[in-house]
Length: 230
Image 1 (tube, helix red, strand yellow):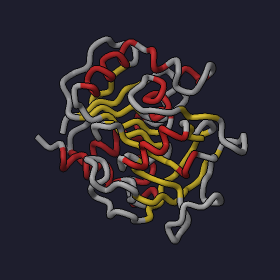
Image 2 (tube, one colour):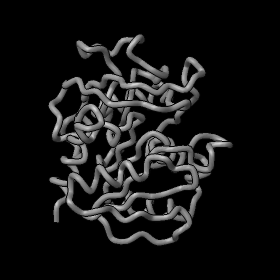
Image 3 (cartoon, helix red, strand yellow):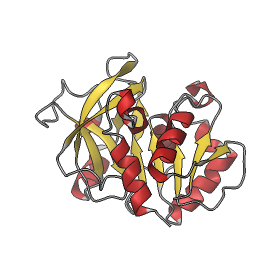
């Protein structure tokens, strides 16, 4: 699998994703600077977490206008798989590849801890190593992770099985106490209509090695490596 990781000023999880992808695919990804106007031919593009441009205007909004994002959008629309994690999820929403927006956490505080997720859709290229309705542990680290969309958009996401992950308790129940940021319907990750773009607030790359305390996140990178192997 050939992959590329987009790097912005303020990215802080680009190397974590680089390591996770290399471990699952045995092929180090290409690191692409935000100011580049071309992307190499790859099987997967990852927009990593961090604080692109310091998120000084609105989380992800400035990065969405970086030169490289025009290519990311074009390739996504042509079918190339794209994974956006945390700030990357925000950027994908700001660039129009995914619906909705990420607002300030309901508690108005930065949240950095492990959370539990229920796998809502295990049939995407990103999630096929998980079982449907399985509960997995993945860390979050964000201040603007409160997923918002109007009622019609949320209903469409639900009706078309486009919610990939949902915050839940240990029994798999999507309770308000299990929701770390106030996201609508406890949504933690969504896919686009074609199923080739996934945005999620939790960080699978931070639990992609047993030395980090768990491997629930590794299964996502393993799934991608298997599905996108040359």
